[in-house]
Image (cartoon, rainbow, N blue to C red):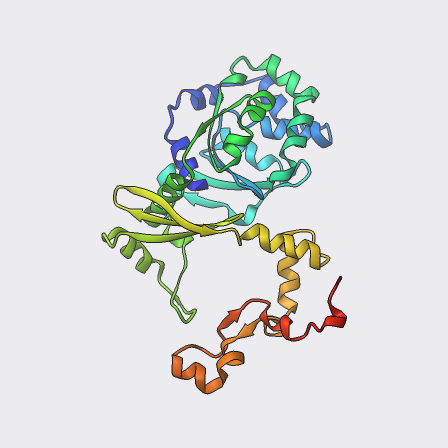
Length: 315
């Protein structure tokens, strides 16, 4: 979805980017100067993208934006690695994209921090300075998708001067997939049923050879199942068990405070201690008779029901 939004943003009229490239003097100094700490610095960083090619996807748990850097005029994205309460630029995800004529940079923040961040930015001295110095400040247009593109549209416009051009989430997802298949196949990986990896070119061939419809599973805050056909896409189902379910359980049951910390803890764990496997239900011979691997998870957390007696259950 993020790629789909960024593709539409990169294809916009070039007038704004040409005007930004010609900017010199005090405005460039305003964008580059990082002498003020905290929210002043964050305001300067975020507002510096108002004339860049930016695609945004604001989900229920995490907000993401991708910036296309075409040259030195777009190197503002490199000026910070962290911003605000939870924002960060993930340098490990940087990828060259010749089809768009530059390099893509990815940033993210916790969606729950958006209201507070916009409030502090709108009250900052940096915002006042840039509004006075930049006459085209209010003309920033950002292609955005996800629920937050509706929920926070007015807030972003009032605080940053960004006007959201909304892109349908499923359309953006499918366009982004097609773009990656066509122009960035090295960013994909394909797995067979037994977990072995195969060439991404195989997936590319299947997707582009007319084997439609196909089912796309989009795992985010929740999970959506999307039927993709030649002439469009539609949501046909899904589940409320998604990324936020995982993080919610992690925050309540462990000391982890971030997804990365949860991943580190998971490396030390043993899922067979809590998950119920096929062999636990059918035995070794029964699983083989069904043609199912004995170590296949039959029920997540299912083993815990066999350990919890009445005395140990919480009231």
